[in-house]
Image 1 (cartoon, helix red, strand yellow):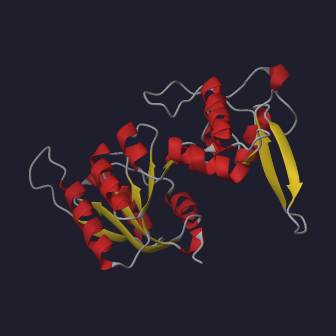
Image 2 (cartoon, rainbow, N blue to C red):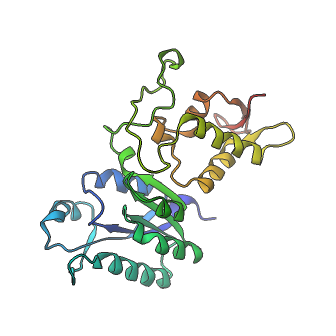
Image 3 (spheres, helix red, strand yellow):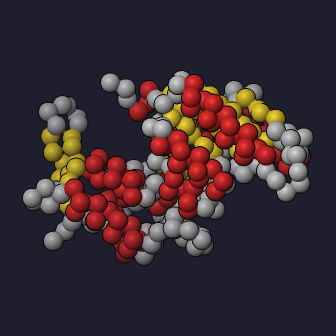
Amino acid sequence: MQTLNDLRLAVLIDADNIPYSNVKGMLEEIAKYGTPTFKRIYGDWTKPTISGWKSVLLENAITPVQQYSYTKGKNSTDSALIIDAMDILYSGKIDGFCIVSSDSDFTRLATRLREAGMKVIGIGERKTPHPFIVACDKFIYLEILNSTSTAIALDSTPEKRKRGTPVVKKKKPEDHEAQTPASNVKRLIATSITDLADENGWAYLGDVGNLILKKQPDFDPRNFGYPKLTPLIRSLDFEIDERESGQNHIKHIYIRNRK
């Protein structure tokens, strides 16, 4: 059986709409989901605005694709990336795509690739338009890959903080729903538990996490200062039951809404 890390991925990067400052972190993140079989970056390399990318391409084995701007104000880079994506799709050599861009022009591409049975992961900045985000199976914000980035505060009151809980700072509200307030996050988790719960109200944490991603592809515990879903769940005061799995040091975690 093929596992998640066995997936062959085509990584296609839009140099016009993505900063080059965290390429290493971005590729390490992609490695969690599969093996990059294709790594291509698209842009007009005659422009000084994307010259910063050039120094990191060889180091990370990313193939640059030159695309001149034929007409002022028109982005021909997008078209080149889309054409290559369809060529790669029909080659049958990959299992999924990682589209690195903050541009909504790739919304239809992501939708089409998913219709063809491909796993589609999006990576972009928080300014990415919502239609592109929800067109992906999973969307990751570049900001959370930076160790210096700040997270969205779920609860910043001193009396609610516990030892070992990350202290996070509030960011200015953004235009789209990635900046989810604590009440909305808890509601999303609670409804997902209800959707999957057995007769006693318990739901397997892994299934809950998968359902949340289907409902909200840009959901990520790191957006709120937590490395994994379990610490986030604990901070929001859900009931947790750790059950023995029959294997040493491995437990299955079940959660339910407090009555």
